[in-house]
Length: 94
Image 1: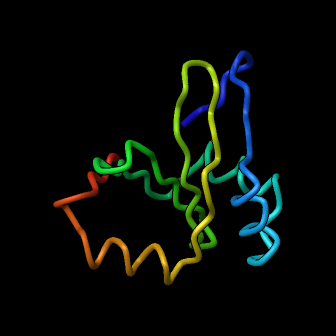
Image 2 (image 1 turned 180 degrees about the horizontal axis):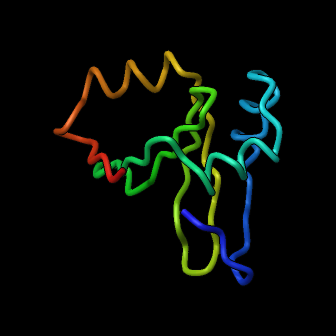
């Protein structure tokens, strides 16, 4: 996902807490959004998941010209979700 100039980025309190817990900076969030190694769509929750080079995953949603960072998953959490629900719930975009 390329962030455009007119897009407003909001980070939820929950996502900020997870960022602190996992030692992930805002700059790393931006990097994951702009250059994901994998991008998936969660059909059930209507959110996207951008996987960073370091393995963590950024869960975000679009609301018009607003991108809301919902949470940040560790590598193991993301892999467990994909393993548990797979193609029934997630569509890998790239």
